Amino acid sequence: MAVDLPATASVVVIGGGVIGLSAAYHLAAAGVRDVLLLERDTLGSGSTCKAAGGVRAQFSDATNIELGARSLHAYGRFAETFGQEIDLHRVGYLFLLDRPEDVEAFTANVALQNQLGVPTRMIEPAEAKRLSPLVDVGGVLAASWSPDAGHCTPESVVLGYAGAARRAGARVLTHCAVTGIEVEDGQVRAVLTDAGRVRTEVVVCAAGAWSAAVGRMAGVDLPVEPLRRQVLTTGPVPGVDRHTPFTIDFSTSLYFHSEGPGVLLGMSDPDERPGFELGRSDAWLPRLGAAIERRVPALAEAGIVSGWAGLYEMTPDHNALVGEHPGVSRFLYATGFSGHGFLMGPAMGEVVRDLYLGRPPVVDVRGLDAARFAGRGSRPELNIV
Image 1 (tube, rainbow, N blue to C red):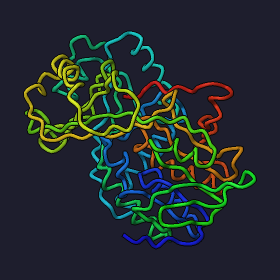
Image 2: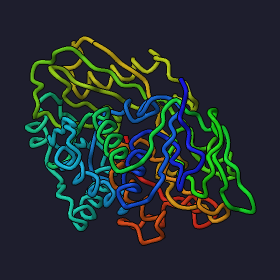
Image 3: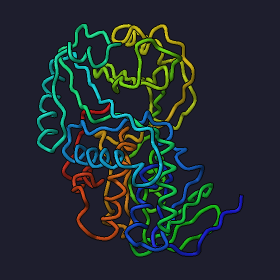
Image 4: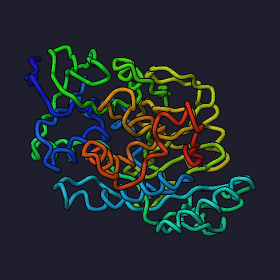
C-alpha cells in the first residue's frame, strides 16, 4: 500500500492509539499546521482497542485523579463534541476490599478524590452487594464506589478522534512504520519511516508499549516494558444488565463489567513476564477460576465466547511518563500509563498540546517526567488492576 508521506511536518506524532490521536486532534484544533500522525498498523491496533474500556478517576495520585476526572468529563460529552457515539455506560466503578491495609489506603484515596471534586465514597459490603448483585461479599470489609465512572467502547473513541483530527487539518497515516529519528546537536531534525523521510523539529512519542524503542531512536531513555494482559467475554449471565457496575476484586485484580447479555472479565497474572507476547495462554485460567469461584460464583458456569490479549505499557512505578526530554530538544512523550492510558486519553491530548505550545498544561504533569527515575525517585500509583 502506497503511503502519501509529506516531506515536512510541524510535529510528528508517533502512535495511532487514543493518546496519539487525541494529541493530534488537540494540536490541530489549536491551530498547529501540518500535524502528522504515523501508525505502523491500523489505528488503535496496539493497545487501545484491546482495552477493557473502563473510565474512572479513582486513583491514589492527585495528578492521575485530575487527568481521569478531566477525561471522564470529555467522554461524557464525546458524542456531542465529535458526533461519534462511544456506548458510554456510566454505571459506576466498585472496588471490593478484603484486606485492612487496602481499606485504610482507599479511605485516604477517597478523601483526596473528594478534595479534587470526584464524588467517590466508602461503602459497606451490603451496599456493594446491592450495587453488584453477582458478587459474594464474604470476607469483604468495605468497598470504594464511584457512581459517575463506567466504561465505553475503545474502537468508537478511536474513530471519533481520528475523524476529528482529520477535520481539524491533521494528516493521519496508517501502515507507515517509523524506523529512525534524526537528532543533530541535541535537536530533532527528521523522522525516518519505511515510506521515506519527514523533516520536522518536533516529535511526540505516543507509542505505548513500543515507546522504549522509539525513545532509543532519539537517544532518549523511556523505561517502558510491555506486559501481556488477557481479556475474556462470556455468553449470557443471569443477573447481568446494563446497570451492572465495573466491579473489581482488588486483592486478586479480578474485574468484570456487562458486555451485551454477558460480561467482559479479566485479571492480572503475577507470573506474566515482560515481553511482546500476544498469543492466548491457558496458564492463568486456574487462578482466574479460583478467584471467580470465591468472589463471583455466578460466572463460573458462564460459557466463554471470545477473548484476546493486549499489552500494558508498564513503568517501574506504574505511573505515566509525560514531558519533554531536556537533552533532546522538542522530543515530547506521553506513554507508560501502565493500564490507564485509554481512560486518560482526552486529557493527555490537551496536555501534549500545551507542552508543544510552551504553556502551562491543563493538568500539572511535572511530576510525571521520566527524569524522576534518575533523580527524586519514583512516584507510585497504587490503584491499578
